[in-house]
Length: 173
Image 1 (cartoon, rainbow, N blue to C red):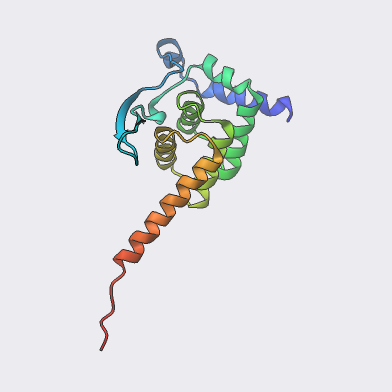
Image 2: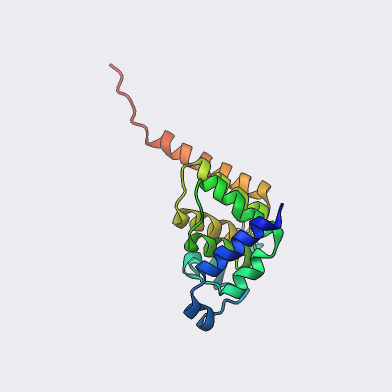
């Protein structure tokens, strides 16, 4: 990949960064979350589920922080690929959410790419929907594409079972 694409994203970061927010807001690499102990399948084993409470689209990163992420070639390429999936340039809100997925939720660039691929394939391009899926995956401790595919498959199976249950029964004459 050329450095020209990286320069484009750095210029976008400069345009996106709010100068007032850059001075007053600072985002830690840790995200807001609560932990909750839940019962596992076996009664003698407890699992901890992390429940994230921060709204990714409400988190804003300073110009310097965005430039730091954009200096990473993998991250710059991720933004480029997501723009291709979305079919348009990313908004400031979307870019901040993606940075939060990467920095706050610690999702890999591959998993974030799959997140957008999955959502766009299901005609869900709203960043609010994508955030909910990302937060769900993070709270379920999903870190790989294989785990995400298993989760989405389970979700699809569950939805189909609901559709099957709710189908009206036909009366026989």
